[in-house]
Image (cartoon, rainbow, N blue to C red; front, side):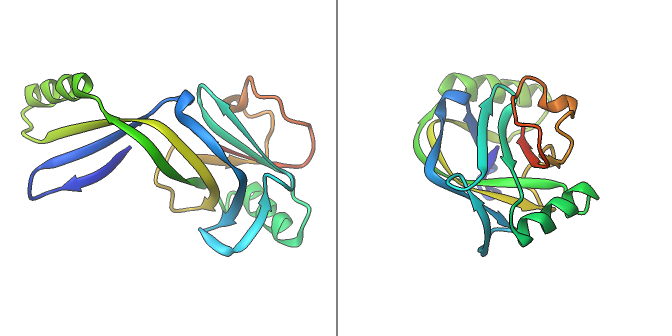
Amino acid sequence: MISNIDPEKNTYTVDRTNKSAVYFDSNVGITLGHDYTQVFRTTEYSLQIQLADAGVFFKLTPNSPLGWSVYKKVKRAALRHCRISFRKILTEQNTREKIRISKTIRRMGYTDEIIVHDLREIIVHEVCLTNGPANELTYCTTNVENTRLKGLSWEREKSLVYCFP
């Protein structure tokens, strides 16, 4: 994920995250469009989170009017993506990866400088459903048989599954 672009210095800062760096706050909430007046579930009440090699996966069992409204929007593909909010706790500059990427982009004719930080610890505190994701590869589905969910174990009930590759 590119976290900072400085066009004056022609510099890009890239944050890299691995599975072992991800932690979850004690009570993660799920919102609609980062609107904290619309927190419709938390991990304390029917929001489940799983961390897998393919990404972070969230499951919500709707049991409120807002929850059912969101479920219907996802089912008819009116709401298709999601985001997460997190705090970076520890980072470390990855000089070897910076050199490797810089050599690659120089061979392609670019002069940009790449700074790579490995995120050693991040804490997820919010899940957000949105159609304006930071990562277009995210998706929401009501189909627990979706092949992208292979290897995850969820209860088979009406639910939403949110995925972050």
